Structures are given as C-alpha cells and as structure tokens.
Amino acid sequence: MSPAPPLVLTVAGSDSGGGAGVQADLKAMLALGVHGMSVLTAVTAQNSQGVRGVWELPGEAVRAQYRAVVDDIGVHAVKTGMLATAPLVETVAELLAGTPGVPVVVDPVGVSKHGDPLLAASALESVRSRLLPTATVATPNLDEVTQLTGVHVAGEGDMRTAAEAVLAYGPQWVLVKGGHLPTGTEAVDLLTDGAEEHWLRAPRHDNRHTHGTGCTLASAIAAGLARGLAVPEAVREAKEYVTGAIAAGFALGQGIGPVDHGWALRR
Image (cartoon, rainbow, N blue to C red; front, top):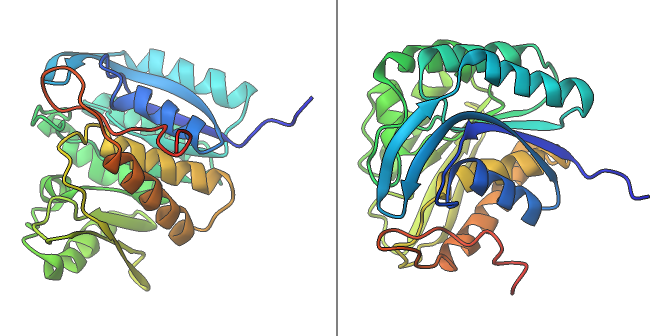
C-alpha cells in the first residue's frame, strides 16, 4: 500500500462548465501530484459565456464540510476561492484561524473571467480584516487589487505600491498578478513579503481561452506548499505550470474556453 500524497483542500465555489472553481482546483491538484479535497461554498450555473446564477451554501454546511475533512483526513495546505458573502468569508476565516501551522493560499475572487461579480461589495471589509490575515500567500489580480485597496495598476511601476497596500491587511506574502497589463510579450507578476521581491516573467501567449487561470494558479501554489516548498519556489513552479496550461487552453462552447490542466501529462 502506497503512502498518501500531500493533502490540499480547496474552499471555493463550483463551476458547472468545469473550467474554474473547485473543478479547476481539483484538476490542477491531480496534475501536480497531490490529493485534492473540497469544501463547496457556492453553486454556480455557468458556461463559456458567463455566469447565469449563483447559490451560496449556508455557513453550517461549509463548516461541516471543512471539519469532516480536516478532523479525519488532515490537510497540508488550504486554498480559498469564491466565498461570495461576508458571512461565508467570516466562517472560512474562523475555520482557517483554527487550523494553525497549515499554509493558506487566498485567491480573493471578485469577478469572473466574463466580468460577472462573484463577491458582494459588503464582503470586501471581511476579506480585508478577517481573511487576508490568515493568508500565507494572497494572489489578487489587478482588478481585485483595486477592489481591495483602491490602487490602480497601470504599469509595472505600480505593482510594488499595489503589493504594499495588500500586505497592509496582513498576509505573509502577496503575489500581484500582472497578466492584464499591456506588457508586450511577457506576463509579469510580483511576489513579495515586504522585505524581498521576486519578479516572475513568462511568455505571453496569444490565446483567449484562459478561463480558470486564477483558480489554477492558486491551487498550484497550494500544491507546492503542501509538498514542502518555500513560498518563492512554490510560486515559481506554479507560474510555470499555469503558463503551460494557458498555452494549451482550448475552445469550449461559444465563449472563452479553459486552460488545459492536463497539458504536462499529455506532452
């Protein structure tokens, strides 16, 4: 009998189209050699064209799922995604605070790839004051940075200011994702803990099928942390994995298709 692989728990919403959310998280975890587990926070009806509906689960259901997994199986890293409302954010923050010593990757999901809101405005303060302080790594994109801090990133020169603004809310590290910047042939991210900086650059692929990029990156970072990697190395490996997944993203339905989580397995 083989020993169990590292254990990673995603706390996030579902994507019925299979490109983002819990579905993307579990695919990425499988591809990266860890055992993925899930706490469902919301059900979405969505496809390649957008989100048609969102139904949040009650806090007691989220708490019961989390406790069922952690109390019996255990966990080596947690990744959070769509939490939707202030009560859900606060429930999850309380659970994370009660699981000390486990690295946490917080993807502060605010809007979908199609521009659909996935976080109530009333939940922003709970994300700032309750969720971000639990994070080993927070992974906001540029729109989420603006949502959380009011900082607008127009170029690479603004990314340090954005990172400092997010770090002020308490995460140990922040990864400011610059994929939406008009930076020519490179996708540039900044990882910092306020003392050291890592500028991560990768080729920018001309592929519109990028649904699930943020979920996938955060899950890949959590997988690396569960395997015992230091934060900079976990983030570096995760960016390499996601860059390959974006390059291999494929058309699905009539809109924006997903990244290919299994690209390395089929290479």
